[in-house]
Amino acid sequence: MHVYEAIRARYSVREYLPAPVTDEQVNRVLEAARLAPSSSNRQDWRFIVVRDAGRREQLAQAASNQMWIAGAPVIIAAIGTNPSSVMTCGLPRHAVDVSIAITHMMLAAVEEGLGTCWIGMFSQDRVREILGVNPDCVVVTIMPLGHPHGGRVPAKSRKRLEDIVRYETDSR
Image (cartoon, rainbow, N blue to C red):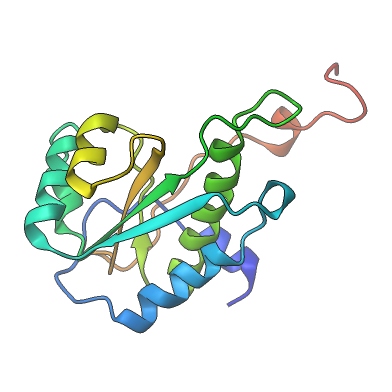
């Protein structure tokens, strides 16, 4: 699969088949994160793979009771390990770096025939507690991973390129 095909095929999957995800598939998805670029190559991240059904259910409850999340056979929690670090431009380094790694994982998942969804609505404290995350770290997302229920990519509504791109300055 070419990268543009993966980009077009990726969508937020909210219903999963009960089919297992192999260790090899999970490792290839994690390898994509490992290879992702990071600020000054710091790689200030950690990824927690959750397969246990009870723990997946707890995570779904911690995500505002979005119980469909627990239907994925795997949830990967992406952790920023140095949340106090700020880039010169003023952005928190972990938010940028971990987001890049997660995007790599999402595209690798498409290549594997798997689906994902970025979950941002969750209790930071509760997820930290469930996963035993150090208090000096931050959970950036919990990402369900599994075989999508349904075979076709839903149509995506996207703004036109002309509406989101400017050249040289932000004025038209």
